[in-house]
Length: 361
Image (cartoon, rainbow, N blue to C red; front, side, top):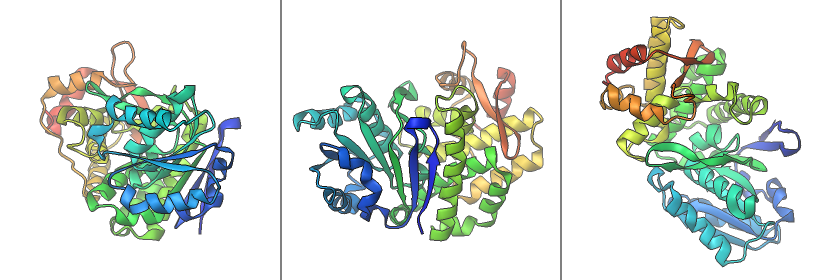
């Protein structure tokens, strides 16, 4: 059965549809009925799996449909490949009534959204996330953008989609490593906002790793409920929304330091959560037992828990390029308790203790 929830942003509110075989249902794409044309943006991995099916669905709306296929991978989330979207839109006569449809994971969703925010100063787009990470996190909330060699997601815009259509069946074609990467964001939602959800994740680890449809349906729904509530309260990340970045300050440093694409985003976030939990423990917010439990849950999702050894100075340098940094001070998301997070300024000495203890320094 399909579940639908709403991201409440007044006149810019939009639905999140979660269920099976959704990409075959033209009624879910009703926002395209007023479009002059539709452009599916996807990548070389996803296109052979789902582009033809989605094209047939969208053609039933009576609009011309084109497909733009980008290379696959975090390393391609840059200006050069963003330009490929603009090239195609301009070459084939897209206009202000053109609708973009992002078919893929977080990279495709972020780049398509940024293209939509920028083309002719803003056109509409729909998210059709095909990875678990995108379904539970990046497709919801309107964050769009590209990476810069000096920092991840530092160039972009807030631009909300008009709908998110999460087809659970697309998760069946995910490699195990990609599935685990998505589970990192699922664990994050429990850790920062819902202790009972974290209990459920811990008890259902095997079903989640086996991509059981019922388990995935609950994981995606609850994650989207948590994120949509936060986004509705703080769309532009001026306050509580920043807590969704638990593990990301350390994680983004890992991604930038390793080179984008060496570790998957979810792998870096999973390890980053271990580091952030260690910091939370050092600040005496959570106990050593709670730190150990969270580390065990992250490890049970086949995620790395030992960071690459860059050294404390390099980590501090990389984390300085973070959207939560204010006045030159890095601000960290820490757990005040399981199910509740806060943003804190932390003395560098304590952060370096965490880097040393976790093996990063």
